[in-house]
Length: 416
Image (cartoon, rainbow, N blue to C red):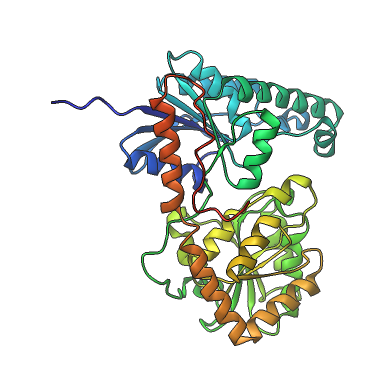
């Protein structure tokens, strides 16, 4: 007897999806569960591309960047929205999965043209704001456009989504209150649970030319000022104050060249290094070569207080104690599992003092390494993907395009 075909899923994301770990993990999990998955992404500088991954495909539609600064600041040009929506519509998906608020409009445009298609919104961050907040980031005409765009997204999410998921419990409560919807399911952005205790890798030390015994403080992820404020610069400025060790900042983004230039200047040269991002499948090999994981986020915008950075869970996965700014969600996890210390990211002296304390107290370091490994047994992708798959089962089983999500919770979450 032939089995009916598994549902088709079309994910949309406004980047090239080469190193977007959340999108790649979710697509792979759904593909392993038998879904047919296509990711529609963008290719800023090249032609239409199709990449076959293990079990799913990525289609990158060409989107040219405008030379005009005013237009370039828009979330998505109308042409880009239309191209993404057109590519997504050809998938004839059962579920259109919009990653973040700037993919909601093209996902909805595609879904409304496909009979019985459902729209799922995956909120990686807050995703909404006031006109005043738009004015903090954009010049006056563009701020008004961005705010109006947000109102349109709000209406689509409130009226047309069949399910909403997000990355932590604080954001779930905010999303439920703002959109007046059932509380979204929480799918935290964690790496896979290690199958064995992680071994110390030498690949990172070799890459920067230090001995394997040199303690390395790593900070990985997107290198943009909006995410960190002055934290990344101050992490570099803290390096000469370490009693021993070096700093590695690894990732990509608009701040890469600026940070690399700073790290090359005396007295930071030889103590601080800036490396490009590596493929997702190689990342933890580099991370496991460090001694401490840093999260030096300056909370210069209210939305940053609600973040649960991917790098936290990547550090925990390989047993790295964490030195972090006072992000509420990160601090609670660090306190509950005794796996990290809080510093002031606006002060290089505070960053260095906290790192020196951790490296010079062997008992404290051992306790925090054990706490990190214990936390990794809870915060891992094997746990989180079960929540994702449960959302999809409920979404496709129910006759209504807006199933009740109130019972879809993260059973292992410790954030109230």
